[in-house]
Image 1: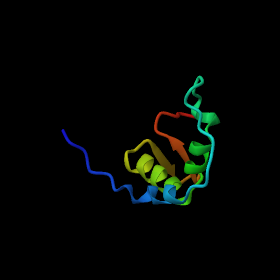
Image 2: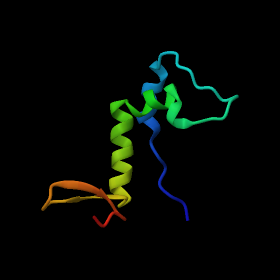
Image 3: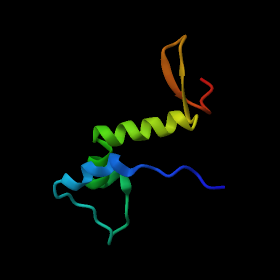
Length: 75
């Protein structure tokens, strides 16, 4: 089964990314990557990640509590 083709225009912001450190020779920890941190802070990237999670039913909105939660969160 083939999925939809993803439009990668939301990553065009990466073309203007300033220089950052992203060491690959040491034990790699994505949470310490300046590159990853910058990328996920960009509005277009944030919006795409949010839309993907919502459209794939990974998160849902509760109109009663006016909150978003993970699909498997039963709190």
